[in-house]
Image (cartoon, rainbow, N blue to C red; front, side):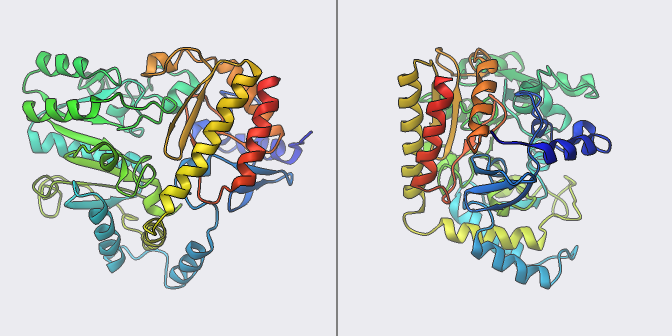
Length: 427
């Protein structure tokens, strides 16, 4: 049985200085109980904690580490870059190079702006949409998480769902009033909102594949219908691809589903494991950003040279022939094994997968939106999670998060994980 004595001691110490002992709520294990392992290092598909426990990691820093931990090429290039300085507060050619790579991968993006987080990207994209359209309201989807900016925390899913919080205190009522909420996968609800607030909606923001209520795939026709409705109403369509960008495919979810948004939010993978965010889209919209236009945004660490360097290296590796095919094969093998072992144990689950993203819902109901996701048995998930942890598998500590497969996960990792899941399901 794995022991976590040192991690427990570190967690107690952390709680004296950090609210809840963490800097991001889901890390505190409130949804599954117990104390979180304190991680000291990672390499490839594995992480090690302060007690010397070793785990196969399916959190992968919540998505950025598509190549696994401490990829040698990324580490080498970062060491060289750090030796030249960690931040300048001035332009570098690295920003232009990474921007060119992203724009080449996603034709909907003609210009972009780098920021330091996905929250900052979504917040500024919404502000830009309001300025461009001259309208105030934003439509989002229940359970969709677009960062912790005030207006986006209405029915925010993810961490809010994990902690059972309906919304966040401190958000002014005026922000909430300008955020309209529809069920995910329900284009008719969006149509009715647009009809109810004619000429008032600036944008519809959506995770094209929802990944913050657990993983929920878009129904056929849902995304094309959003595109049609927004175009007819003069409303901007914003794809939040912070998770799906360069994860589902090199061109993101928009390339998989063939839908071209007006604005796209990115993060995670494009920074290669360092803090990063970006938003971009049509040139006429992006030209409203200062200093070219009147919409103001600034950031000391925007376009940070280390994040740009890591992003360039990672995207270069992702662009190699066969990368996504191999990642798909590994992810499909994991899904197949988990499905078979759950069935064998007589445990009713719904497994959702999109490329290398995966969620096991402990429910017999189809999961199509936030309401159906919330029907999952979170107590059973908690037991499953701890059974995996004891067997050396580090799964996301929340029913409402997605697991991430990396290219560092090999056949042995998948076999070990499926074997651990078999014991967990039986228990």
